Image (cartoon, rainbow, N blue to C red):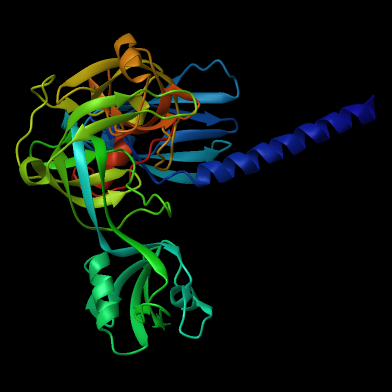
Length: 434
């Protein structure tokens, strides 16, 4: 009996040590800052044997309250913001060993005009993108691939040829046709890094012209949805995900781009295994409403060139950070016919607590019968549709579930705001710890 007791105690101590090491690692890697909107609350859960203290309590910026939790090994605290400013909380082990200091930044309430507008998106890339390769039969009768042999890879962006900035695909052909040398210098951008490589061109056996051996692309266009715009700065955000090349999957680098007013002309319903699609019409010369400045994996961003309105809202709405998002009823704003924005009911069935930005912040399910009848759920072209809950903009629709078009992913609005350039957080990083 004594040996059994010793063994059980040993197992318990080992498990406790494992928990301490694991939890210490997790808490140590928490972001160093938490954002809370002035007047709002945020929950903070922590596990035994850790505690947290408000070491900035004399500043009277936040109040830290201990709340009841069903799990006896968990401690739940409520951070109540009092006024704008910065305070600090400290995570401790066993109540006295300091582990992590976290700054709590209480920020202004942010108000934005919700989108829901169907927009045409036209993007011209910086340089041209290599999307595929093709062998060339040279004058020697053998197969060659100059681009591959020079180390160029699929997804690379060709910026310059022999010091001349590349404009588009036609310009590349012109530069190759006019070169007098077999060897050219090509400036490449790959995953943010720029370098130059020498390419030994090959003359095609039949055409007797220099060839690179690469398929290239320089622009793209499509339909999406506007998420928000700031009435003061005219900054807008849309799509909720980046524009990627269909062949490579890489984000397209922006040289210039525009968003235009689009009119939804028809809808292809979404079905299991087959995503639906909004089909629209836009005219570049007549309907330009904004310039695209950034293409990120969390959406496209830029500045409006003309005033636009929302037929459902005449005043901006406050944003809701992820600590305010709850599972349950919400709404999305989107356009499924002509240019009229509609409000449709959805259900947030899961909300992830995220320390770092992710496109899959929450899972939403379409419950609105009218929308289900018209589209079958979430379809291509609805990406960027703002998600509204409790009168606040909390996120945007990003992706549809291929096997269930009634469901899809949503992105927290704070991750989009971080990318947008709207200044309201003293240039600090977003982070919510729950």
